[in-house]
Image 1 (cartoon, rainbow, N blue to C red):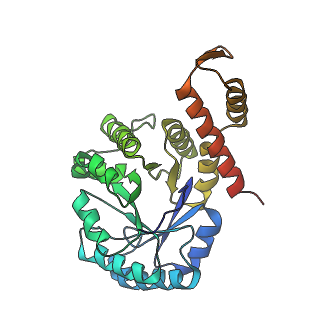
Image 2 (cartoon, rainbow, N blue to C red):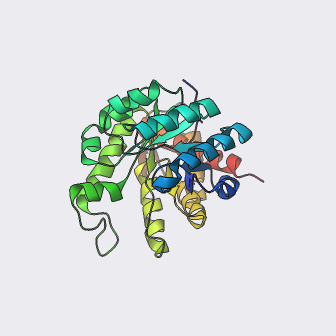
Image 3 (cartoon, helix red, strand yellow):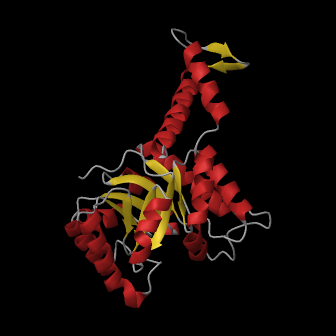
Length: 282
């Protein structure tokens, strides 16, 4: 299997696969550009989009690119995987994944790593098996498709919070990713007319343990990056904690009892901040 990037994100920006004039712009704007062959492309343009994305991969290479194929259980999705394998893709985003058998079908066509997206009730019932699949390096979810599958009339309360069934699904995905040792990526925020919703979604996702978030517009990328980079005060406190921990077991630190779980969290905060700084250094 081709190795996936060690850190996928934090900002992954979708770009329609039939708009090649936007490919370079998406890469310049985000940490990962997701060239889309699925929902972002009209049915009549999908075959052309497959060729355009494959040509771009051949010309540029796969670094910082993920390709969203069509439904992995469909003939179109499998044709996408074959064409992208020939073009040198390394990372595929699989939409509407409903079980490991769909992952197996794509794994038989390509040696790419997978980001599996769970977007249906059936998929969430199989989320642990999907996350545990050997080719999956990251897992995400889709509340808008899931809400439609459940027959929900909307995805949010009047205050902008996710409705309880969707919050339950998101929490289950975090557990599945952690149990399988995979990266959890949060979904897009489609409400472009209300920046406060994006800020809340991104901030909450970072606190919950997601490692990144998908974006549908370049203007969303700075908000996501800011939310997912730990605040300077968190990083400084984490450094002080690790210095104070040298050679000690559980101990009192700045009013908090600290033991190994807190130290692991501190190491992750520092690692996340240093990775963000290195990635965005001039």
